[in-house]
Image 1 (cartoon, rainbow, N blue to C red):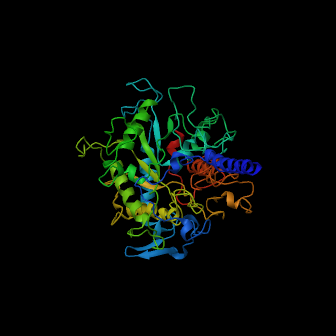
Image 2 (image 1 turned 90 degrees about the vertical axis):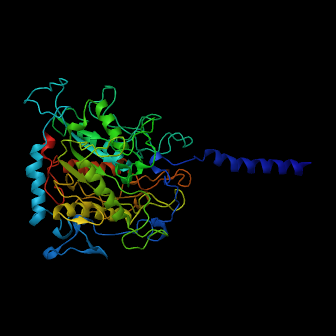
Image 3 (image 1 turned 45 degrees about the horizontal axis):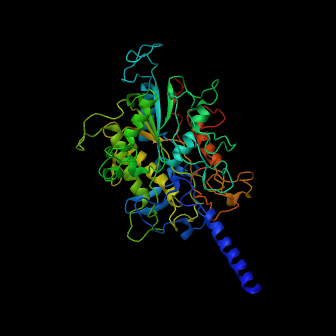
Length: 507
């Protein structure tokens, strides 16, 4: 009788050993910003398929050397040659020819036109409140985009795998994309920025851009009339900011409205509602910073990592979306039938700034098979979409992808914000940036840095994985530091490329 009893015990322990880990294994992604493709695709375009994790290397645009105006090339195709520089054939500054004319339009003509306005768009007398609501006038500097932008601008209120990580309370310093209260929120108990509060504090201070701007009441980094306002939110890739027929919300329900009737301008209605909740209006928005991209890319510029059936590089697809978005920001909103109203959404918009991705070469393909959010080479190549859109405006030319973005006829004035891509752990001489992962923490350039991108739980990478794409607390600070430099508040650094064109930020 002892043998059957012993067999029962062995079987019981075996069942317990297999069921207990399953009970502890979380379901779903670590954050909603790491969700699978919404189009249901399960393609294979991922760095793990060919390039290898951390193995993609290229020259950051502002580090390119262009002797006699001849910049290095990245690839050539039927549209010509993609040049490695911020401004294509103009190199890394707008100091000559039509590029200088373009810069002067933004820095000399438009910047002084950015002044504090009332919610009805009027400009009050100096040192007076607005007649329409007796509130101080304001300049709204609006940030829009996707989850990375949201995390970098205002931080997250919870960490990855919160509530799914067994006995651990947090994967500290690995925030999820969550909206923040923003400046002048009517709830006085809220700070404009996020820190982790879900399941209690994680003990890590996220030095997001809004945190850096506003956290010290004795040293606010912008003028009293300037409102740095976050309108970015998780999963809002470029197609979701494009309200034309090519945009996402022309054929999908808007998740921000219970009646599902905000189409195709879904995101813009949401931003308008958020602005109004804090006492601002769209007529006070005078500068916009856009950071987004395609998600789950399908084809690279060199044609080496294209899914079956996809031939258009994602950099060109992104360029098309950027063109549509820029023309919409110029004019105009739509009526209920999808026709133009002839009225601009942001009547007093003067400047738009674009930027590219951070390094994406650590994406590991663990999530949802081999399909990563934005691995390399796509993250690097997205910089060409930004560059080509800006150069098209400089040259006043219409291209096959961005279309007509001439200023002032068809689009607002647009230029680079800070350039954020760096070659893996290698420090960029121009920006001082590099990007570390948990796997590179032993590198001399990454000592003491467990990872700038979400790496998950080092004790259980299999179940509590990281997407190695979204920024951690150390990563978001690197971006927000660049934004502080961009607005001219760090005298020890200069912005790569053009001089500062945001003097109004101190008004």
